[in-house]
Length: 422
Image (cartoon, rainbow, N blue to C red; front, side):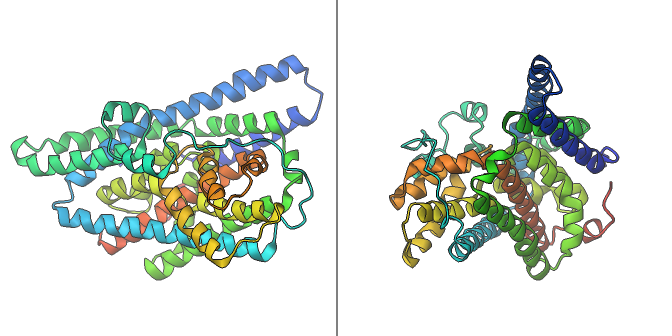
């Protein structure tokens, strides 16, 4: 078994707090000469953060491809894949619907935008970027050029092609001398690469957090404090309460054990703001630490990074209510129901990259003729909120992986219940 670097969680937390401390010191004080501060921002924080992100992104496409192909080709028959697909997609859509409903109820009850008096600033795009519409999302699942799709990180297309390739490999394995074993071995190599990159995680987290703080500080949150506090509270509630409910009463698993083991993944997601970039770490943790069969994990996790956007759905639901309130517009009960459906639909097409959910929020605002310019307020505070909701997204991926694996008798509960490695 590939071993995780020792004291990784402790070192990541240290890097996280050091990034906050150094970034805040440089942003809020004038002790360091500006030239030195600019050098640190550019050549330590920015460059170090970009290198770390590039190393993570480097593994995403090949790991998703090899892990999915390995998993699909090992399932045995199409009936197993059908059962796995229905359960996976069904649970993901259900938790997303619960997430956005929770956000709408909280927004209607707490009224975060009712006392907002500032003018709407920072213009938002007036139309969707190419490839973000529902039509483009559906057609994008079926790529005309898989190499181009991989180069552009089109995850839905990569997942679709990987499933097809895995099915073909499954059906021809007896003709190719068990060629699927080669993919399993390549998958193991990429898992080892994950461990090698994880060794540098504390430094990468330090650079990413420092880069954010030194550039923007924390003052922006004062203007929309009610929205920020309520959104963070909802994200934590969904992660700790909703997911605990599913783990305990649907999966029959111990939530405390789960959260102890998932903390590294959540920290990675927080620092990268990208579900896709966190796939390598999520896959390894789900399989090695939580006991999910590798074939199931190889299917559920990449699919989750593509369609499971609970944190994003919470933001979209609350942001819609918030913008309606600051604009003096009352949404009807029917419109609330429409928001739930749209948030679930757009979450499927949301790219697993930083702040992509803010762009798809335009679809919902256009549906109800809400002012698109108000997205500027959301964007102003979105960076660190995106970090929190990405942590929720990847935690949800791991939760559903455990539940689906348990339902398919593909969960090693002895591993799941074992003491976590620190």
